[in-house]
Image (cartoon, rainbow, N blue to C red; front, side, top):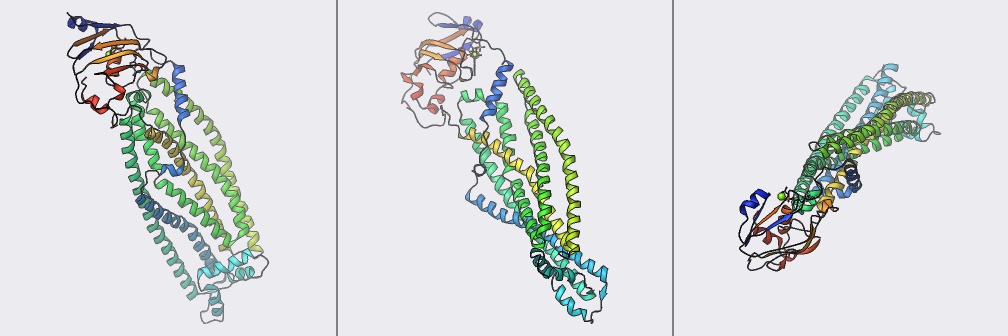
Length: 507
Ligand SMILES: Nc1ncnc2c1ncn2[C@@H]1O[C@H](COP(=O)(O)OP(=O)(O)OP(=O)(O)O)[C@@H](O)[C@H]1O
Ligand SMILES: [Mg+2]
C-alpha cells in the first residue's frame, strides 16, 4: 500500500509528527460504560424472541440419502425391539395358566383319557391365547367359558414339560430378537446421527467464519463456543438414539395394547385409560426436570465481565423461579400420581377377578393384560422425557440453523467485485458518517473526510475512543459506512473484491 498507517496515543503521534505529515485529532467517543441492567434485560428478551423451534424434518436436514436409509432400518428394528416386551407378557400369562392348572389339579396320567383333553388344550401356548382371545372379545359366546374351563383341567406331566420347553424357546427367541434389534437400532441411529452432527459442526463453523465483523459484535465469542459445544450436542442428542427410543417406546405401547385387546378388551380399556393418564403427568414432570437442569448448565457457562454476570444473575433468577414453581407442582403431583397408580392396580385386579369369576378370563389372561398394558403405558411415560429432548433439539436447531442460514452482507469469501490490475494506494474518506451496528445510537464519525496520497506516512492522533481504530476498520471493510464512501484508487471499497482487498492491506 502507498500510505503507512500508524494508530496510537498522543505521545507516539507527537514523536512521529513532523514537517509535511498531518495529524487528525478526534474527540472523546461517547461513553464506554458497561451495559446497564435494563439494556441487558432488553438484549436478553431480544435473544429469547429470536429462538424459534424448527420442525422435526428440518432437524434431519443434514441427513444424506445413506443416513436416511440407516434411519429407516434403525426405525424398523426399534419397532421390533419395542414389540418384544409385550410379547413376553403374553408368554408369561400363558405360562401362569399352565402353572395354575398344574398346581390346582396336579398331573394327570399320561395314558389317561384326559390325554385327549390335553391335546386340545396344550398344542401350543398361543392356541390357548387365541381361544381365550375369541372368548374375551365375544362375551356372549360360550367359547370364553370353554377357554377358561380348559385352563381348569388337569395336565399330563409330558404335556406340562412340552409346554414349558416351548415357553423357554419363546423367551429365548424374544431375547435374541431384542438383542439383535436393539443392536441394529443403536448402530443405525447413532452412526447416522454422528455423521449428521459432524456435517452440522463443520457447516456451523464455516458459516460463523463467513460472517462479517459486525455480526460478531452481536454474537459474543463465548456464546458461539457454547453453541458449538452445548447447542450442537443437544441437536445431536435429539436426532440420535433418543429419537429411536421414542419409536421403541411407542411400539411397546401399541403392541401392549394389541396384546391386551386380543386377550381382554374390557380389562385393557380399564387399565389403559387409568395408567396412560398417570404416565403422561409423570413424564411431563420428568421432562420439566431435564429441561431445567440443561438450562442451568448453559446458564452456568457464562461468567466474567459485569454484563455477563448480570445476564447470568437474571437468567439464573428466572430459572430458579421457574424451577421452584415447577418443583412445588412436581412434589404434589408425584404423590398424587403414585396414589392413582397403585389405586388403578387395585381396581384392575378387582375387575380382573370379577371377569375371572364370570368365566371370561383365565388367571393367566389377567397377568397378560395387566403386564402388557401397564408395560405399554409405562413406555409411553418413559418416552415423554425423550420428547422433551427432541423439543430441546428443535429449539437449539432454531438457533443454530438461524446462524447457518444468515447470509453475511460483507462476505470475505465472495468472488464478486472488481479486482484492479494495479494498486497505487490512494485512500479517500468522503463525507463518511459511521455508527457501529451494535450501538446505533452513538455517532463515531460524522462527515469525515480524509485524503491520503500514495507513499505518504500518516499519523492519526486522538483521545482514546475518538475513532482511530474505527478508521482502520472501515479501510479493512470490517464495516461499511452509513453515509459517504471510502475509496481506494477511486474505487468504492464496496465495489472491490474483498479477498483481493484484504490481501493488499496490512495491519
Ligand atoms: N465493535 C464496536 N461496537 C460498538 N462500539 C464500538 C466498537 N468498537 C469501538 N466502539 C466505540 O467506538 C468509539 C471509537 O472507538 P475506537 O476503537 O475507534 O477508538 P480509538 O480512538 O481507537 O481508541 P483507543 O485510542 O483507545 O484505541 C468508542 O466509543 C468505542 O467504544
Ligand atoms: Mg484504537
